[in-house]
Image (cartoon, rainbow, N blue to C red; front, side, top):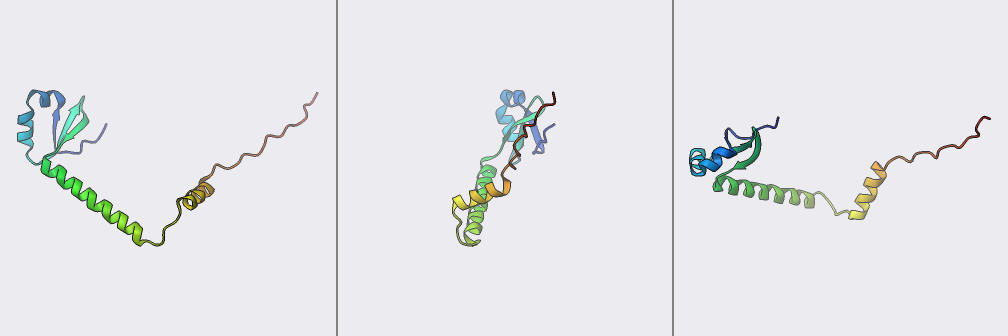
Length: 102
């Protein structure tokens, strides 16, 4: 069973029946929209959604800056060559063809 990542939940049927009531009751809290008791979507207030985007953007900027500060750049070809050498499938020895006993 999937984990519901909200303290409030509503069925799709209930949401269709009364969307404004669901939004009013939710306030600033996220609401899990369930389809057959499984999360199908989440409703967020505009403020919560904007806050999430700002946080993600800030985290992305920080990660990019950390990458820039970590040292000199490495060519993509060198990275892929190292990954291929490190994780390449081991070569299988050729099958020996032996004489059949008659």
